[in-house]
Length: 393
Image (cartoon, rainbow, N blue to C red; front, side, top):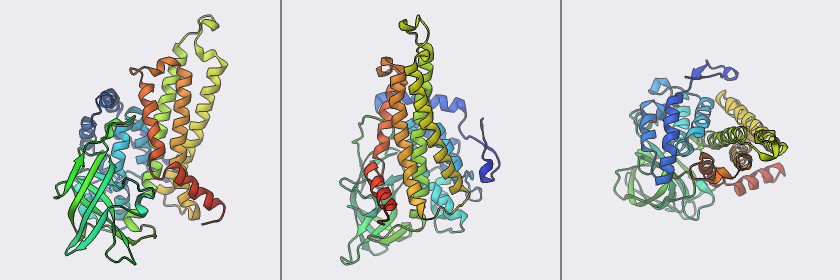
């Protein structure tokens, strides 16, 4: 196994959880999953067996004690081998990361959920909704208070891990007091009456995530599964607020991993392809190729440094002050944007052969397109950053 040097956080060097042989198996399966629009079931079984699902949880609660920074490095590396697998499992990890933070802070209210994760159960995210462009700030799903909990009804989209999730973290709007609506955050069990999956996922890229629609029809959720209730228009708190420092850098790192792999493939192609205009020498000797490789390397280097600096700071518990949200948004936006830029350059470098379905670059080109659509999307990021920089917030 390869060691991760993490001296800047004061942590002892540790090892990647997924060795090269495991990752190569993932890469071999990725093409078939993509071709058949199939869920990454075999990958998930191996991830579970290796403890990846509980990696972020503290050892005191049955986890492996991996830090936020270490999980980000793991996900970046996994994405270079199997992008859709990394993205799909990310929807589980972004629940377990803040869960670990709560446990480490001494809050045991969510110990029941940690027990489920340690038992191998999978958590998915039920936040996407048709027409909802404000993510968890509001919801078209309705939470009706009843004796002992809530009745939840709504339509969730982009439910990654649809064939495999055991718990679905959802948000819904409680309109029982019309003058003071609230947003309720809670967990739904797969077997709860009124839960159904509609297989809608047949997409350009990241096909193996199996991000189908989920219908919730008058689903009863006990009160003890509620993990947060806030007034509409106020930010989430506690466990739910803890999602952001995990999910946004993780998304940036996943797509950065895809871009890194794309450039590696492009460089290998440039070194092996000959050019008649160069009397048979490789196209690596062309100024055009060298320029594009340099542009890609510069973009990767800058974004890699940005993401590593942020995740190390978060792992060390540093107070990032008023720029915290800006830096989190920038991590997601720059990671996904750099990945798209580099993958576009990779196709230029590798040439027309990259258009073939048998070429891994063709799949990476499609997979990397999804990065722009994860909340907050590029429009939302720029709205926030622009207003922040102009002192309008």
